[in-house]
Length: 86
Image (tube, rainbow, N blue to C red):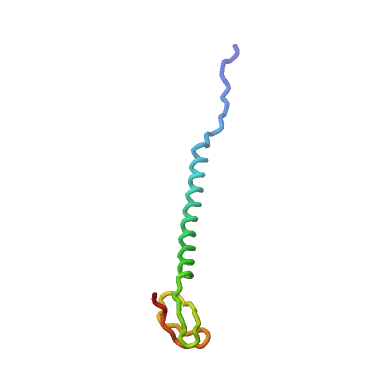
């Protein structure tokens, strides 16, 4: 008598959840790196952009220095000048 067994067919595993989790992980990594470098670059450019203006009373030269400087020598004549206050 012939056997009536149904052959078992191997089905591929369902990888949908794995693909979604991997995509979210990559998206989260890109978001973190974007925020990190955006904040870092903004801090660097703000520090570079913030300058104090000076006016030399000896040679009439306008120049800038880093923020936090109250007295700076003139680059042309080396006369110490105080910052301009508006």
